[in-house]
Image (tube, rainbow, N blue to C red; front, side):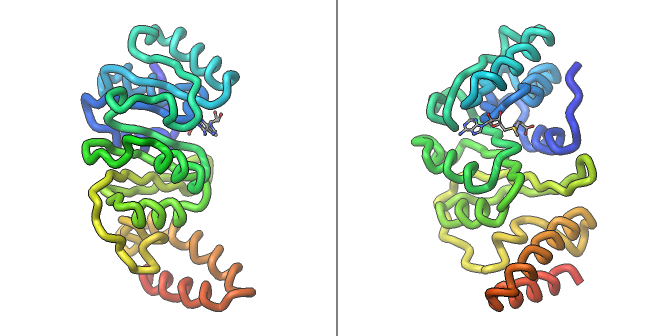
Length: 216
Ligand SMILES: C[S@@+](CC[C@H](N)C(=O)[O-])C[C@H]1O[C@@H](n2cnc3c(N)ncnc32)[C@H](O)[C@@H]1O
C-alpha cells in the first residue's frame, strides 16, 4: 500500500470521495495510487509534461497493480485532459504562478462542478490573488509540516464571484492564524518575506504589519 508524506496526504484529504481525479505533474504517481487503493477515487489520470517522471509513475502503477484504474498521460498542464475525465484536479509541488497558468489555460476550468486542489511550493499569494481575480472561490485551505517545512494546500472552484479586494486576502486565504499554530507559521513566513521586500518598497512593510495584527 502506498503511504504519503504529510504534504500529499493533506492534498488527498480535499479530494471528494467518488470523484475522478487528474493529478497534474504526477511524477511518481503516489497520490493517484493512494486515492485509488483506498477506494476514494474509482479512476485517475496521472499526467506529467516530462516522459521520465511519467515512466517512474508507470512503475508505481504497475507495482501496485493499478493499471486498470490509473491512466498515465503525457500532458503540458491540463492540455490533454478532457472535460469529462476529471472532477477533481490536483496540482502539487509546482510554483504558484505555474499552477495558475495551468488552470487558466484549461478550457473547462470555469465549470462549477470541478474542484482544484493546489499545493504551491512558492508564491501562494499570487496563486490566490489570480484565482480570486478570475472568479474562483477558495473553498478550503489548510497547512501541514513535512520534512521541517510548512506547506499550504488550497481547494478552489469556480463560482464567478466578484474579486474580494482585501489586500491581505492573498496572504491569508482561508487560514485561521489565531486558531491554528501551523496557519500562523505559514503567515509568519509571508511576513518575513514581505519585511525583506519592504527595504526597497515601504508598502510591503505596511502589509507585513497588517498581517502581523492578524496573528497577535
Ligand atoms: C516536484 S514534482 C511534484 C510531484 C508531485 N506532484 C508532488 O507534489 O510530490 C513536479 C512535477 O511537475 C512536472 N511538471 C512541471 N511542469 C509541468 C506542466 N506544465 N505540466 C505537467 N507537469 C509538469 C514535472 O515534470 C515534475 O514531475
